[in-house]
Image (tube, rainbow, N blue to C red):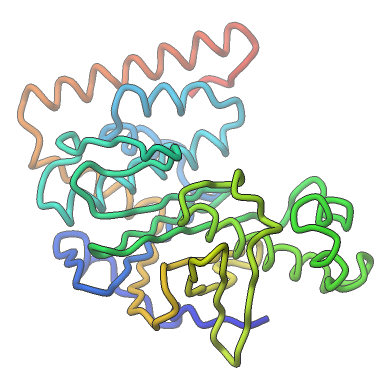
Length: 290
């Protein structure tokens, strides 16, 4: 399968956390492994930088793996954008476009994706739109019927035989590329994945929907995870890839020198709220306790 995402030599995290620079025409792609081997106490660190509403989103999720990925995703989003904006995470203000796509007031453009065991965040320079999708291959159901529903009869007919080893790889290539474009466009799945046309020329992947064109980068970021990145236009872009462990993300959260005493107290109060909310859901049989 065609890939051209430069992940062979990711930027060292230690050289990046305090020195993010978003140069014109560049994209940062940050990846965090939050799999089962990630220490559970790391979640407490991640929750420190979340807003009240983000903490509540985490607490409402039923599965521990989903809560872990959600908490890591929001923490990564706030830490990375704050580093670029040279401010503290709680100073960031988020809104939504008319289409519902989340955005940061006064930019830069970003897009977030998380799945079981992994989180991906893309941040684009001014004037660029970006979308990212990461998927875990071990979905309960991946078959031709789902392909027809998602991509349409014509595209589904081009996939390998459903019983072959190549079917799942081809399916997730189509899915991640199309969803990354849909997210970059801002319409999400409402755009209709079957309307997105994918093109491959040598090692160059691109997509088109209506009159808009997108450059695609894709890669297997683990044996179980497939990722696609969509950037507006078809020009080649400089994609800076940073891979973090769960512990590195926690260390970043622990660097709280930017918090005043009042803000630190607010963080501690939010942590108590999340734990209380989670335990309340647990008592109702809806959520394991944190």
